[in-house]
Length: 391
Image (tube, rainbow, N blue to C red; front, side, top):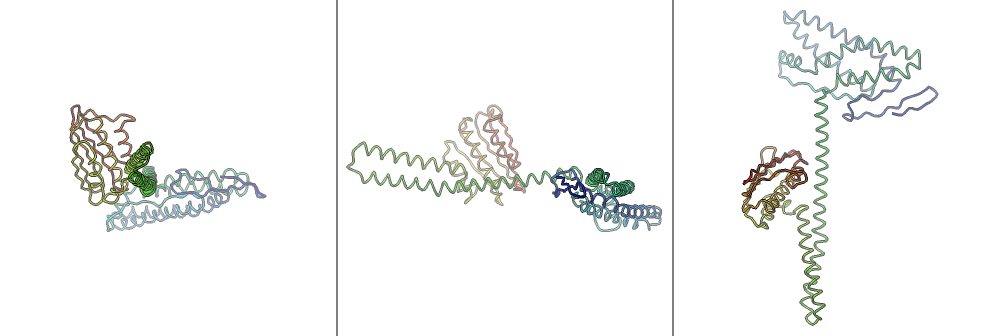
């Protein structure tokens, strides 16, 4: 917040508040604070008189059933006045108080009354409206003094306005748990966008490699192969160079194809997990049984995470487990994809910092998934990942 100096004295320039960006109330500016403190008094007086009168009459007439409709009307009045206060504080003090979240209820007079009495928001609204009356008297006097004594208005009025804004935010705003839940949701949505962006960039790199450098290397390898067939009378040294270049070109094509497949296999996007994993496991030296039941097809980021968890797990099995057989089962519940990789190896696998299983755990965690490992000495080893599908 900046302070500019003009002929009328210091004047504060407020920042535009953003909902959910900060739990602290922004500091209001001088003139609006003074108007708020003075103009709020008649509003608070009317609110106090209406609520207290309605409550006293309603409670006194409850025994003859007239009071129950009146008390229900009182709760409606409390809600309406609290919403009015939210708008008033927002417009004058710049404190963005989110709309109230109230408990749903069934139809009927008694059901409505019971639901409102059980709703904490109702009691927070009532408490604020009752506290606002004595505070309104103090703020009204402070506002009049601020008009009569300008230095008091410049230094004290904004601080009183800021304190009232903080009080209104705490009492009329969402609870701490609700604010934390909203912030958590915001972070989850932000991270989901980041994960989707990384996924899209990875696919773009795979397409560029497949359609660009890989195709050019294939062309070079074919040209060298044709040159070998046509150059029958060249010296042996030149033939050896052509043979070596041809071999290196084919090796580069193979390595580039493996690199592209490691970034994002095209078959995964085109034909799904079953086909992609079958193509991958066909190259392994051990027998792998695959069972995939993921209808409807999960989001692409979940599918990609599943694919790489399985591939990296099978690579670890081949390298370290001494297994002869592995089983991969993938199925989908309503909102989760479950992955289980089992092998008949020596067991004893644990998640160590920096190890391969820790990397799998981190990969699952990027989409809020959980990975567990059960690997007693002597085996079998079971790696299970539970991956949510809310992406």
